[in-house]
Image (tube, rainbow, N blue to C red):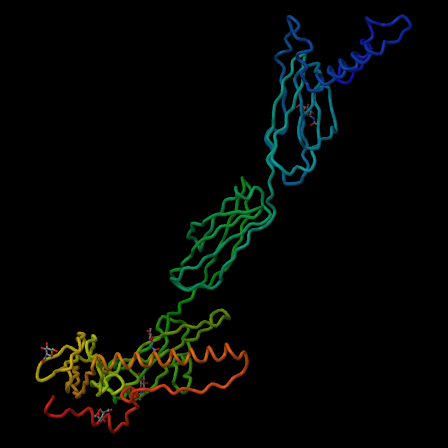
Length: 479
Ligand SMILES: *[C@@H]1O[C@H](CO)[C@@H](O)[C@H](O)[C@H]1NC(C)=O
Ligand SMILES: *[C@@H]1O[C@H](CO)[C@@H](O)[C@H](O)[C@H]1NC(C)=O
Ligand SMILES: *[C@@H]1O[C@H](CO)[C@@H](O)[C@H](O)[C@H]1NC(C)=O
Ligand SMILES: *[C@@H]1O[C@H](CO)[C@@H](O)[C@H](O)[C@H]1NC(C)=O
Ligand SMILES: *[C@@H]1O[C@H](CO)[C@@H](O)[C@H](O)[C@H]1NC(C)=O
């Protein structure tokens, strides 16, 4: 008896005991019975067969039957169909079948088995195969694992590697499910790499850092696996050696006025030899030849950088390496009017320093004297009238020394302050007058410009070369 036939028979029975004299059910009884029938159908449909015949028939040996499912372990390619065979050892089985969320179609059956086609399998699920035998139901389940693994992995990364330089390469496998379960093995030559794995959606990646230790041709390979399935891909890699060019200055600390030869040549480990271009050199030497530049070192060249580029073509690719070196030119100390003025004004009562920065390489040491007393020019002084006078400063480095007289004039405090206040008041008045004029007129107006007064001592003009030279000679009285 199938569950459906069970429903039909129960309906036949429904009017059995309470059949009306005219052969028809009374309305209320009929509804009541219909509900009962419905509940019974549900009961049966939900497959609780065992409880219908609540007690097993005594003496039955059929409780020993088995239910089995073929295949018993399943990997299904994403979206593909799957055939399953649900069978039992029960000699005369009752209702049986499979329970699944997947779309199923029964394609065949025998007395002790049923074969189903499951379509469009796109996610992992568990299906149940059940049979009842003499009122006892047994079932067995099958886990369905869906996979996608049809594409080949792809290697991303440079096919050109420099010896000793770390590069990142990645191996990507698209269209794979479950992407999080893909394993990767990457090799550079026969050295196994230690990749970092990641995945998103149906793509999995492995990123590895590679560092080739010798030149030549190698192979980068990537092996991906999902369960027992494997795919492999390879990429040829060319390893080159190309250190930066060697940029040298014959004498890296020349004296001002001497000739220096700046040369740049390809590194011996570069192969083949690169072409060299030295910034400032006129001609481009043939590949393998050095480039050079002869110059007379001037003071201004101190700190100047020279740069040199090496060009090499490897596997059709232009590579460039650059070297930079700095020229240091030694020269005697100088006390220039711009950084060490010979006339300086201090304001009485203010903290003041003697402004004097010498030039020279190596950096000169500066010593100043006043009335024969050594005076530290870096320590601020509280300016007093009696600081007025001629100071003598001497700058010295290993190449020589130079001295200069510096006249300091200390101006009275009131004078300084009152003149500043006066200037501020004039400026404020000017701004105020302009603002009021604009405000009153709301239109274009002519404003008489006020001339601000400047004190002549502050308007210092550029010194002529001659004056500067004269100033650098100290008078014997001070130095
Ligand atoms: C299903 O399985 C049963 C029991 O193993 C077997 O006898 C039957 O031939 C199978 N049916 C198909 C279609 O393979
Ligand atoms: C500068 O050095 C290069 C390489 O050492 C040399 O070939 C060249 O003749 C030198 N130039 C001069 C002017 O000495
Ligand atoms: C030369 O290069 C150095 C760093 O390499 C830099 O500090 C310096 O400012 C450069 N000099 C000039 C003149 O550009
Ligand atoms: C410094 O002042 C003196 C006297 O006021 C003047 O003769 C001299 O030319 C000034 N020197 C410079 C460099 O301005
Ligand atoms: C300068 O004058 C101040 C007082 O204004 C005095 O204390 C100080 O000793 C004087 N310095 C010199 C060096 O004469």
